[in-house]
Image (cartoon, rainbow, N blue to C red; front, side, top):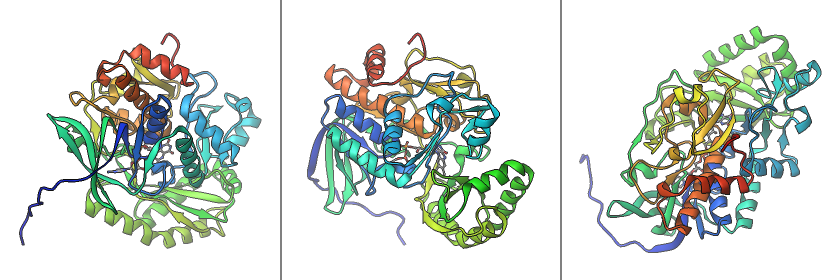
Length: 447
Ligand SMILES: Cc1cc2nc3c(=O)[nH]c(=O)nc-3n(C[C@H](O)[C@H](O)[C@H](O)COP(=O)(O)OP(=O)(O)OC[C@H]3O[C@@H](n4cnc5c(N)ncnc54)[C@H](O)[C@@H]3O)c2cc1C
C-alpha cells in the first residue's frame, strides 16, 4: 500500500468575502463575531457544526465558575449579556447579586449545595446554565448584530499570499470553496489555522494538569440534585470513595455535578493519555465513553443518593480542554499569574478560580492583548483556548468566561485595526481598552 497520494491542484470558487472572518463559533468565536460586527465590520463566522457555543453548548460544559466574589473586578461585556439572556429565558441557576460575597451560614448553606458556587468561604458570582438554550441565545445575538453565519463549513486550509493569510478554504456540502478576508480570527479552540498559516505554536501537554485530559460529558435526568448536594456535603469522605469506585468501574475519572435544574445532572469526566486531534484517540474515546454509560448509570442508581431513578438524557460532543496554543507576542506564564501581574495591555481581568493547578483563590487574573497576536503572522488573531501561554497558565485560563472575553477583544481589535489601517499588533492598546470599556468590559483600576 502507498503511504502518500497526490492531490491535484484545482481552482476553487470564492464563496464570500469579509472584513473580519471568524473561524469557529464557540464561546470565543461568537463573542469575536459580535464585537467585530458591532464595530461596523462585515463579519462572517464559519462553524463546522449546526449550532453555536462550541464546548459550552454542544460539549455541555454548562458551568461558569467563580467570576467574582464581591471584591474583585466584576466581569462585564458579552459575558454578562450571556447571563442576562439566559436568565430572561429561565435557563440559568446563579446566586443573585445580593448574595454574592456573602459569608453568613445561611447563604453558604444554600449555595454550597451547588458545586463551585461557594469559593474561599464566600458565595461567588458563578452560574450553571442550559446548554441547549445557549445555542438559541447566541443565534439570536449574532443575527441581531448582523453577523453572517455559515454552518456546516469545516475549514481545512488557508489562502496565503507572501506568507500572509488572505482567507480560508472550507469543505462544505456544496463542495470545497474559499472565503477571503482582511482579518481572520482563529477561534477553533484547537488552533486549526495555525498549521495552515504556518504560524508558530506549541502543543505539549502533561497528564499532571487538568487541561491535558479529554472528555465526553453526558447528562442524566430524573435525579434530585438538592438531595445529592446535602449528602455530598454531609459525607465528603464517602463521596470521594464513591467517585473513586466509579472511576475504577468505567476506566476514567468521573464526577457528578448538579446542573441548572434540580432534576438534571451532568457527569463530567477526565480521560488521560489521548491526543485531542488524533483520529484513533478521538474515535476510541467516543466508543469507550458511550460503552461505559450503562455501567455508570447503574452505579449512580445504586450508590448516589438523589440519583436512584436517573436515566440517560443526552451525550455531549468530544471535549478538549487544550490542544494547540499560538506562540504569541506575549506568552502568559504561570509565574506571572501567581504574581498577580496586571499587564499594561490587559483586555480582561477576573477572580482566580482555583482548580488544582492554580492554588490561590485570592488572586485576580489579567489577560494581555499580546497573547492573542501571533509572534510573526499578520492579518491573524486568535481567541479562546488557543491563546499564547505555558501549559499551567493555560489550565488556569481556559475557562469559558476567559474565552468569551478574549473573543470580544479579538473581534474588536480586528475591526479597529482595519478602520485604522494598521496590523492588529500595531493597534494602540489604550484605544482598544477604551473601546472595551465602552462595551461594558471592566478593567482593573488604573487601566
Ligand atoms: C469536559 C470539559 C469540562 C470543562 N469544564 C469547564 C467548566 O466547568 N467551566 C468553564 O468555564 N470551562 C470549562 N472547560 C473549558 C471550556 O469549556 C473551554 O475552554 C471553552 O469552552 C473553549 O471555548 P472556545 O470558544 O475557545 O473553543 P470551543 O468551545 O472548542 O469552540 C471552537 C468552535 O470552533 C469550531 N471549529 C473547530 N474547528 C473548526 C474548523 N476547522 N472549521 C470550522 N469550525 C471549527 C467548533 O465546532 C466549535 O464550535 C471545560 C472543558 C471541557 C472539555
